[in-house]
Image 1 (cartoon, rainbow, N blue to C red):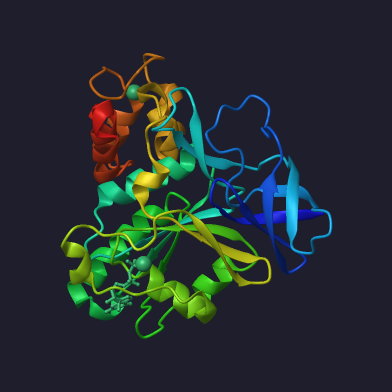
Image 2 (spheres, rainbow, N blue to C red):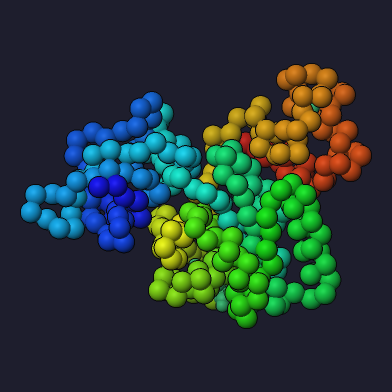
Length: 306
Ligand SMILES: Nc1nc2c(ncn2[C@@H]2O[C@H](COP(=O)(O)OP(=O)(O)O)[C@@H](O)[C@H]2O)c(=O)[nH]1
Ligand SMILES: [Mg+2]
Ligand SMILES: [Zn+2]
């Protein structure tokens, strides 16, 4: 049988096949070629499994089907190994808020760059528009115009009074989406609205302020409806920028990638070099200054801070 991994604990997996959920384990060593990972199978993997003798809902995974993409970070436990967080993601969705809490542009760019490095299309949902004043709404629309010019779909919603939810539903329909964002932006409220059966616990923002508590600690997939899945991730750290080399960073800023071959030096880092197409584009207003600032901030970041 073929199925989709909804949950992975490391020792057993929840696999969905024909609307039925099976508890599966693996037998022996199961690995995709060329991979050194601490976990062979991740949420989102499509697998082949067979039922255990005499069992109706317990199986053994025998094969992992090739992945469209996957999100990996360096393993903290085993050097030279990766840890796969999720596989086969159709889109990475960031839930952001202009206020309460404020999602910084630097944080948004980090998320976009990480997703871009895994070749996953990005979507931004700006939540809590019900509490924005006119001026804030204006600022938000300018931010949206900026990201939409980069080809990123943006939505303005209020999970509280259910404004703008239908268009987001359409965007998620039939896809496997990874949902991320700071604690308190309203991810759980939003997921509950999409699929009340998910029953995520909603926490007051002030509850988090104490210690940055996370209610979700590992990636888990939820079925919104037939063929529509969301994976709730604990946060941006889970996406991680750890594996991006400085030299390739500008490749993950689409507007920089487009013109970097016009720099005078082919090893241009776009930080101080003369005749740099990217620095020129910033000066001319063709590349947004905040995007370039995000680039510099990621570029100069010490490895230990990543
Ligand atoms: N005003 C307003 N509050 C919201 C909205 N969405 C969520 N909240 C509130 O924000 C707080 C955090 O929500 P929660 O869903 O737990 O955020 P999560 O940490 O991202 O899962 C809760 O008090 C929610 O009631 C919204 O659209 N407008
Ligand atoms: Mg939550
Ligand atoms: Zn350059």
